[in-house]
Image 1 (cartoon, rainbow, N blue to C red):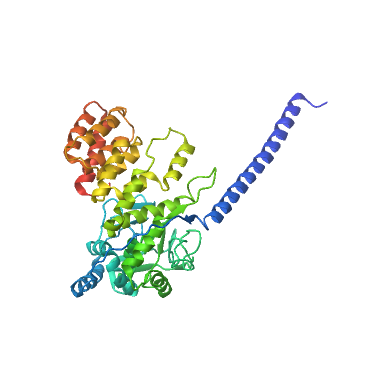
Image 2: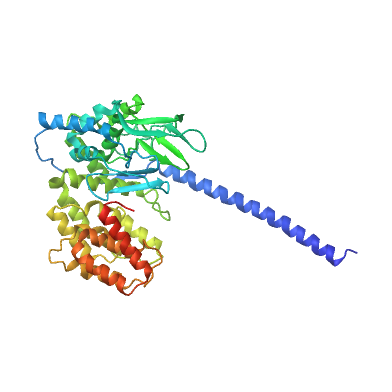
Length: 453
């Protein structure tokens, strides 16, 4: 007869084996579910958008660039050789994109925790601001081999640096179909031609400028986790330069750019029931980027159109934790509401100013309200304090993080109405903990040096 101790040991051993087998099966099932989700995601990303009704907009006549303006554009392109600091689109420590002519219009997707040392080039900013007028000359200069002052090195060790052909675009744009790959994965060819060093050329910065004008996240240099640098260089890769020229060369660049942006603006993300907004967000990104550029390059033609859409947005706060309700609101609005409002609230066009002010007054979602703040028309300096003071008043004496909701409110408030923000800061720190003082210092530091810190 087996002893009770031996029986107990055998039972424990058998339970351990059964648990291990169950655990292994659970892990295998989890891996399979993850693989199935990824395959479904990849399949859906092949066609992430559908085309809505493209607005009919008549382009207002405007003189073409004269000889003096053409000479100016050539001079700006030549001045790119003096660029010595990285920025969005050509940084080895950051992946992201920007629209330089408008403040705070940038987005990062991957980055190292470091001081990126970003500094925007005035020449690059002016070229992007010229839009379609500069586009033909930027396309011609894509293979310009003139070196800038930006030199990259990645020698051995962890990670690597290689050339690629990443081209992001709209699968509904006829000029891009067949050139970019379906699925919005960047059209990467994964050439992986590894290099130890590379000097950014003028043609590469022209590539970045073209992307900013047409609303594509073209990155001549970007960071990729972990410790990798991806280089998309039309000055090095004649095929890449040829693809970009094929997509964006036109005998009527102003009309072609307008129609491309209107198509982006009308590209609706496809949302699958019970799914997240990952696939749907492709359409949202296209619309936000298009709205920004339509208002900048074609304000007279499109401001009323966009103002009308602003007036119809649902800007009600969704219940905390109610993801489904939030998704329903965003899909109804057609784009991520906060991002859409932020992409247009900077405009000084009277129709947009009125629509943004009306939205600010009726919004109950704090984030959407703050996104509209920079465009609020408040000559008497009464509207902004009346709406924002209650948000600050309901915050706890110690939020915890310095960059919490207090920072969000005071940062946006100071940029939009510095005169009224001063008193708000004084009241904010009066009855709070040390965190509130640190938050105010962080806001003042950012506003004073004009950069995000």
